[in-house]
Length: 172
Image (cartoon, rainbow, N blue to C red; front, side):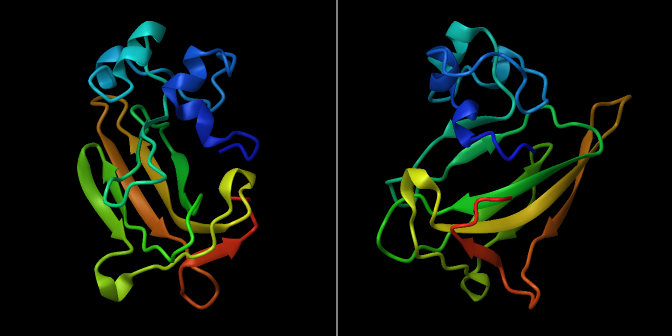
């Protein structure tokens, strides 16, 4: 997507407080309110009257065992979405696990089981200078008649087949 756009414009609070103009920054149509009104930020989305697409339902940088959750409700036909994990804060090595769901079905898991464990250990905070794991590209195909979405998930690796992890490089 766009390198100048941050995750923050996926958060309900960013839109509610006027942080962003409604410019369709991600190039995606808004989602119906029913897609997000029962989430932890549901009351904020209700105030806006729509769900932004994509959106960050769970933003967790401090509690072990609680995932972050990002939704793309209406993916673009023939679109490609890159998944990345940024180690925002902490002082210990961490082992993220990424599950990819397509049309409600899990289609890929990265970083698990232990034999496939990925380690990132350098946090960077708000300046985005820590470890960034580029996990996978998800290519979407949307059936124009039924709306059914299918996905092709391609893992991203370095030249040696290892996880694609860089430090201080925020380009996706």
